[in-house]
Each structure stands twice: as C-alpha cells, then as structure tokens.
Length: 497
Image: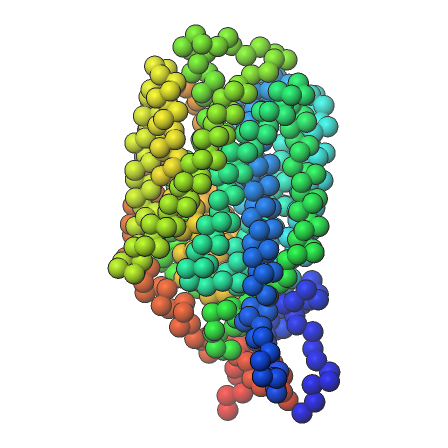
C-alpha cells in the first residue's frame, strides 16, 4: 500500500473552512516509524504549541470581557452624553446579550463541523471593527449605539462557543481543569479591566469615546496571534476514544441527546442563576456605589457633560479582578482536592459558592447607604464565592458531553443562561433600580435557586460522565469503516447485511 498520496489533515492548519463533517476522521498512524523518533501528541499539536494556544485563547477571552464591561465603566458619561435614563442605558447590555444569545447556536453548529480557528478569526475581526465604529456615533443617534452593541455579539458568539472545545481537545483530566481555570481567569479579570481601563481612559482624555477605542486595536493583534500561533487539534483524540465514537449526527439529534443529559441541563440552569446575578452586578454596581455616596453626602450629583463615577468604577474593577483570581483558582483547587474522595465535588463546590455568596451580596446593598467600606467588603466576599464556579461549570460540560457535540452544548448553555439570566436582568434592574433591599433580595433569591440546581446536578454527575466516556453510537449514526487504507464514514445501513 502506498502512502505517496496522503490526504490533508482536515482538522489541521491546512483544513479548509468548509470541510465536510465526514472528514473529521481519526488520524492514521504512519507505518514503520523509526526507533527513537519523538511521538507526536494525540491531538496533533506539540506541548509547547498547545501551551501557547491556551495563552492566546486566554488573551482573547480577556479582551472579550474587557470590551463588554468598558461600557459599564463609563455608563454615567454615556447616559449624560445621549441624555438617556436608566431603562435605556440598561438596554445596552440587554441588546448585546440577546444578539450573543441568538448567534451562539449558529456558531456552535459551525464549530462542531468546520475549521474553528478560521471561524474565530473572522468573528473577532468583525467585533473589533464594529466596536471601533461605535466610538464615533453622534449624540442624536443612540439607536446606532444599540445596533453596534448588538453586532458585537457576532464576535463574542463566534469565540465563546468554540474556544473551550479547543482546550478540551488539547488536554484531559486535571491538566484540562487547570488550563480551563487559566482560561476562565480572563472572565473576572477582563471584566475588572474593562471598568479600570474605561474609567481611566475617560478620566485621562476627558472623553468616554476613547474608552471604546482601546480593545479594537488589541483585538486586531489577537487575530494575528490566532492565525499564526493556534493550530487546530484533532477532535477527541487526546481522550483515546474508539473510532466509532467520533461521528457527527444532525443538529436536531445533537439537541435531542443533550436534552436527555440531566447533568448538563441542571448545571446549565445553575449557571443561568450565576449569569443573572453577575449581569446585574456588572452593569449597575459602579453606578449604584456612586449614587450611594451621593445619598451619604460624600459626592455631588452627576451633572451633564461632567465626568462621574470613575473612582467607583476603578475600585469595583480592582475588586472584580482580585476576587476573580481568588475565586476561580480556589474553586478549581478545592474541587480537584475533593475529587478523589468525592466524585461529585464539582457540582457541590458550585452550589456552595452560590449559596454562600447570596447573603453577602444582599448585605452589600443593605449597608450601602450607611457604610461604603462595609459595602465594598461584602461585595468582595460575594464576588469571591460567586467566582468559584466559572471554570468548574465549563469542565463539567466538557466531560459529560462527547467531543462532537461540545460546541453545540456550549451554545445551548449560552442561550439558556443568557435568555433567562443576564439578557433581561440589566434592563429589569434599570427599570426598577432603587436603594431598596427588595432589589438585592431578588438577586439573592436567584442565587439560592441556582445553588439548588447545582445540588441536583450532583445526583446525576457520575452516571452522565461515565455515559459520555463510554459513548457508543446508536444504529442510526454513522461509523468508521476502513476502505482501501483510509478511514471513511458511511451509514450503518450500508454495511449491515
């Protein structure tokens, strides 16, 4: 048998964008390897390049969240510039989340079937250009700002549904958990940097528009790094799955199978509660802290054309960065140490984080008018416990879902968590915002409900993980049949006689 005419690796750097699902084949092992030759990792990506890939993906994830919360860092200035109230400014986050939510399933479908690196590159480039354009909108056209924030969702949807699946195809077990924790550090840290950079750039230039021009430049650098550094790994190869498990089914079949996965569904509902609480905090916390100080007489009210709330945005940004580092790292480490003695540790740690954070966030709102330092302390504690679950939830999704459905699962979780979570919570709070404890009670109640969902997840997590690890295709799925030295996917009906 001759190997002179080799087929290009469909999942490698040379993979065409519109590669067929059938081409997601298991790599062939070359015959007659010389002794002493260094064996290539199963993923097809060297250890060094895999580490660099995680660094690039983490950098892009940080930029995504930095851009998302730059708007929150200069929200008082945006309200004054466009002469809008809380309900309209709350729409900025809601429109973005709705767009992101609607587009996520599309990119999830593409990410499970086609070249993930190219999909992310195009999306991030588009996001960078749109964000830059949004900084030049005149004050008479607030609707254009809403439109551009919606279009930014294209870039984020193209990235968030796909990037974790690349990490999953590079690492397994504890190494995957650690790499995911590095990746998800970028969520709280990037969010905090969004407040810090937004408020500082606005304060330095005297114009909030410049705050929206920082991340586009960094985004273009991210596209270059993505194209030059990241290599597409082979799907599921590091998990040593049999050939028969690496098959593609229709999108409807994927959704049907995911809907039967109780651990995935329950953990997604739990994460929805996290999204609701963090969405509320992210947009309104700096403005709330500023207004609380106005009520205490420490600061004058914000007047038109005046810079307002930059100090609160800076402090809240620093708190978000620090609590994110502490929370994400602690959550992964606690779960890892408990896992040998308790295989249900992942959902239990997530539940504990939500249940403990809820009373602290309630106390932060209650004490705001009486003591600013106490409010910051309670926010610090609440956000730390809230951050415990970021990397753990992603890790749970990856080990209870088979590789060929992971991007779709990520998209499904994004839709659910944003639809019932932070898509509506910023606007809802913008409409009813006040200094009443009733508002904080709502967020605390949602946090408690989310904790109960994670407790329910613990009942099924072991069984669903085992099912994903030992997945065997059903009769209506395609299998890999050797044909003239190459792996070819054909329908089962064509080989069963």
